[in-house]
Image (cartoon, rainbow, N blue to C red; front, top):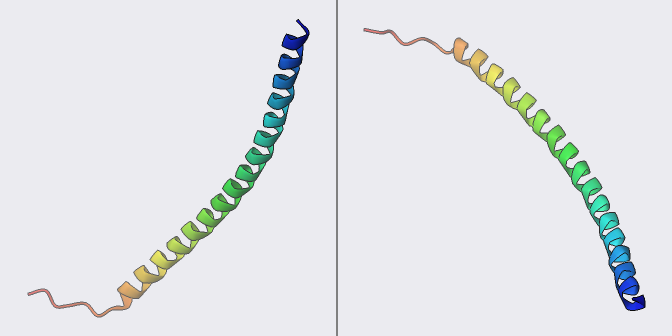
Length: 67
């Protein structure tokens, strides 16, 4: 009986340690995700800005005569 309790205690201690590792890892993943989402939003903004600039430039191009 004592051996079984020691075994279970070891398992619980290992499980608690693993939970702490996963919490730490989850925190790092959350930070990376937040940074990536910020970068994605910035790139979307830059892309839209570029699209508008290209569209504006295209309106300034001379039109070809359609015959």
